Length: 302
Image (cartoon, rainbow, N blue to C red; front, side, top):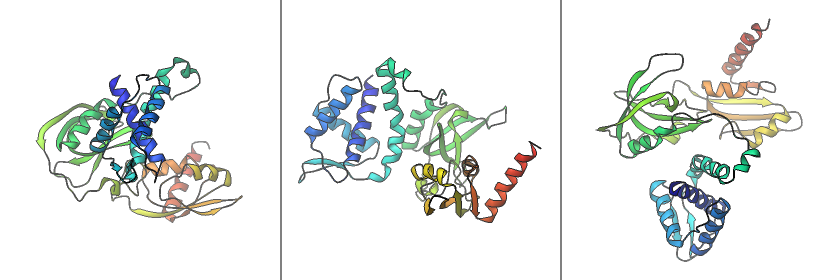
């Protein structure tokens, strides 16, 4: 229970400070907010100022989010806001689970997806290996193959995508990063062998133009223009396909956007899921790829 409480407080502190951009929150107000918010989630012991200060130190040193105290404004604020979205996406499920567990009656009004995310039991080991720059060893089975193979990896980062978790790293004597789904990892162990991280590798930059888990240079970065109907455009305005999405036309007839992205298999599947309104404008190679997929699908119904 203590771990759940700390995770919950961590999420609440990050959210509160992030929601008050440019506004400093003093220790008393932040403590009172945290006490009320925790009580609404079923934790009734209250939060002391000492506990809050320990949580802030944990967030600063363990999560890398620099919460600073400004003496002139007598309050706290977050300095590096650019990484907050990823942190919240990871922590948010804990808040949802707390809501479901706090009152069994909520399961009647909150309908969650009935799937089990495999591989999450490896997360603690992987985080330790990444922080300590220790090589890992595991067995891995590819989709469609019955046998698994032993892999050695220099782990760099963990990535989450649509309910799945992935480990990103370099295999021995290879320069390119590889991605492995944790749901297909077994017998994971941390070795005693340290590795030297390639400081030239920027994971965020590596995936900047990717959709999903593929970041290899074998998928060149392309300028993509896509057209959708206005109704579909309403959805894509609130849930963009990619952070590079830019709106070119937005009227009652068409929603036209541009993207700068790698044409990976994940991206192809994403736009195919909107086939009812999709029209690829450019590049020509993508138009031809989508047409080939459509023709193949139609042949199955002829």
